Amino acid sequence: MLRIVFVGCVDFLRLMLQQLMSLNVKVVGVITKNKSKFNSDFFDLKNVEIDGCKYFYATDINASDCVEFIKGLVPDYIFCMGWSNLIKQEILNFCPVIGYHPAALPQNKGRHPLIWALVLGLKETASTFFFMDEKADNGDIISQTKVYIEQNDDAMTLYQKIASVAKEQIKEICISLNTGSIKRISQKDQNGNIW
Image (cartoon, rainbow, N blue to C red; front, side, top):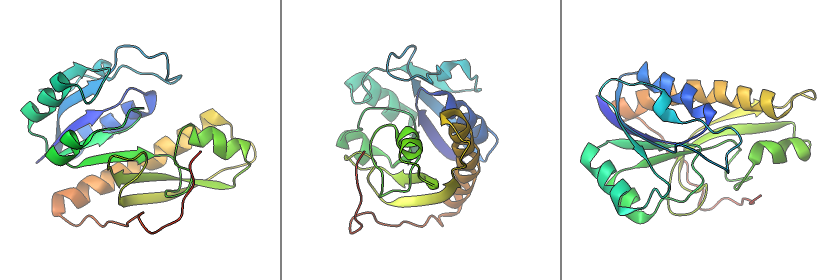
């Protein structure tokens, strides 16, 4: 059974964490925040109770005490979603980190992708999971699903659509990780932009 550490501090992740708990994986640790002035959709994931799971409040994911917490849990994978700091090489070398971005990577990297998609009048965006590297929203894509934007969508309805799609993707990703059948698409030679 895969051992997973989950990193994040937004409401969207509550659904992702609940989905992980229903799969053939063991969530052994959660790194979250107890408050945030940055995230309008902040959610303290310690409020999601998981049997046998250890929790850690972090302001800096790369701080030595946080790194030791992760190493002590011996995870197979880390899922990092809704965390606004880059993860440094020490953690990336220790364990594969799966990141998430609600846009069609390699396009539209950066902050506030749902708001930008609405402001620019895009007709679609995407829900994308990828193996993280030290750059923002970078690394091999492992799952990407289009999400259509309707004329009457606002930030909340688009957020809900993205969450619903991501919930199904995370299920498929865990099945692929368990069976060793994960496929990777490189972003290296593709042109992209940053918002």
